[in-house]
Length: 290
Image 1: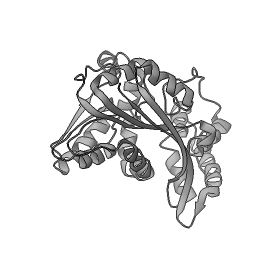
Image 2 (image 1 turned 60 degrees about the vertical axis):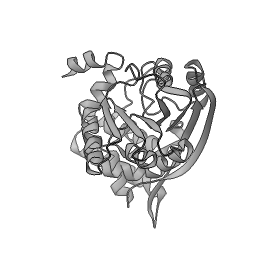
Image 3 (image 1 turned 90 degrees about the vertical axis):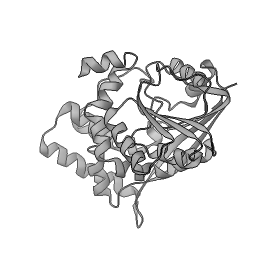
Image 4 (image 1 turned 120 degrees about the vertical axis):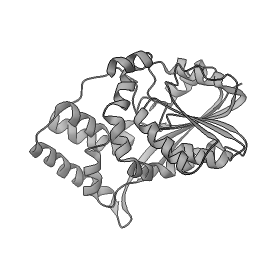
């Protein structure tokens, strides 16, 4: 299967393998929990994207379809949404969710947005919630996506800010590193959730890809997580940087339990009567195709 993925997605074979084998299934399993954590992020993104009735929208890295559903509602039956992801398991969930709501205006495509031959000058709007930080060549990817937009078409995406400003990532990773040692080093700005942490880097990518009117708004808001610190620590064991480190190092049960206990203590700092609320620093990025 890995060889087949490399042939189908030659520009991003590592990401194709990661999101189709193992991790994609984990995100499918925890789809509802992830949707709950990121619902307010999606709302804030669409407020900036401002999709309107009858528009044609492109949803990049659509995952299990939360943003796709919201876009379809806003463009209405007179509009159209093309939802793209490299992960077949997550797309299967998105497809089922759209079918259950009878959203005939949605089309789903398993493809690599970096290299897929989109119809040119077709879309009014390109949107992505945490889906554009994984390209091996982000300038080439955004250049390809720009050509799919009509002149004057809009780009709106949200990505994570720096690691130190995002304890939802930083705390589980710190606990994992203390217990298991650091992960293998990667090049700076390597494809991954935090690849676009530097706003200057994002601006450079978009400018080189031919976008104009680039604006980046950095916002820190609470991320609604589990009801208790212990539940959020258990969740971090299966989704996120700690889960990836666990997959690589395969620690024994006692070490796993100790890490979850330690992380529970860390997450208690963010627990209140409403549950666990962890601050997230995000970049909301908008731009135009000239």
